[in-house]
Length: 439
Image (cartoon, rainbow, N blue to C red; front, side):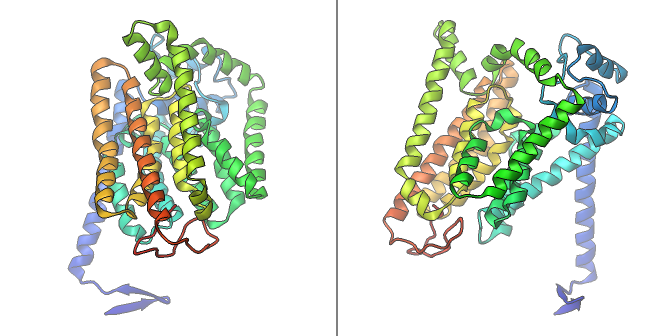
């Protein structure tokens, strides 16, 4: 039995079921608000969290001060009773435009702004997963959305991002939104979202150029133009607010560049750890460059070997997922909560694995789940014991190996099948021997 409402049909449910649904919704909202209030209370009590420096940078802009001036920056901290000169950074650590989204929140007290930011991050997480499901053209996207959301809740970088109030979930939304809009053919707004990923540019040193090259080859001029306009607008606005911010920011970053390279959970941090283990710390920069060359060369070789299949299908997501992992691994500085972006490659791997034979599918799916749930928490425990995050680089390294295995397995399976028909879309929707290979 169904009832019509303004042209729509909704199922007729008993009063008891409606009450149960309302109670469940109220319980969920209460749980989320309780969690977010605890997060904000933790930030207040421990004077910690990345969100505070973003909020402070927004407050500094409102006061027409320079967030790269140590005295002005210290004043903001002291006003909130948060200054710890030995442990807190002395200036804003990011490009000036990174503070722009936090200017509206800077009108509010820190506790209120922190609560709104935590709620916003959780909403963006759900939207990101939903947009990525649409971009992958998943047939049963509702069931897939539920599975990935459960995985996201258990994914350690998601918890750290929300706990510390970082921008990772904003970047996740911008990236998944970009690929969704490209999938839909809405290239101008896609370019705007891609330009906004410059909020933390060091994470996308490979991904942004790779996507721009693809769009250039496909002659998507509106995306390229909107990306350029957005990027220039960010830079010009920052320059108008603080004309010498680039020199001030780079001067501070340069002072600690080598230290940050050594402690990052990237190929640079791993190279330093290996060099220390062998007692040759002077060789770690060269080792890092060698690993960088091997990583880029291996990625280029993989794409070259499977170029015919990739070009035939026109699929962007598997390629960009590989490039995203490589981008994170070569970032000059990052922390383990930035691995929240790995939700997209993990989702892509699960999507590819479902099209393979049962044995391979189960093996790859279990590997991806282990990489997304067990490994991050294990390296977090080790990092808490040692006080170093370098070991966290094992997470993207393991995921890269698994995703490469997914791509290779799917490519080999498709080569054994008849050539598919061109669909003109990003993905194939032709049934090939009972399966649909996404590559």
